[in-house]
Image (tube, rainbow, N blue to C red; front, side, top):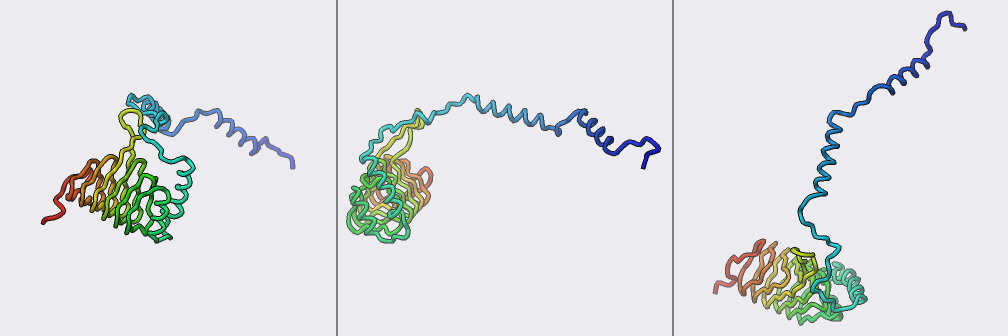
Length: 232
């Protein structure tokens, strides 16, 4: 049917509206520009801070000396994961035998039926009648010497290593000595270079950063003297 009056088509009106919208000014959400600028400014400030940062890529082995070759360390890594730290092997004799085979010196009557971790069995000496709780961790990059009748409870962490925090973060190691009759209770940390005296007790969650005298009860972070263990 012919049109008798010139009427604008709908398609023409839509096209006109789109053209008008595209030519109009665009505005960002309030505060968006300021927020982006502020974020970028803070990022630049953090990146150019004047505080000293140690480049960890330059850290070395420090005074650490490996006592076994790489192949032995790799083999032990898998044995530790498969047997020593395996809760489905609740047999002390198996763990003791394997540790001895890799150089540990372990006395008689020691109990370790639970999963434990030992980084370097060749750096471990244990006396007679010692107990090791679930998840005890012997991180012995240097020698750890444990006397007789010692109890190392659940989740205790003994570490002979740290880093040179004031210079270049080189590895630093020093031996740990735990004398006869000591009880390291649950979740304690014993740091490098300390000696814990005969029959001393360290209470749960403590951090032993220094050597401790004999027959004391110590606790806290950092560890402090609480009282004598024996009253008579």
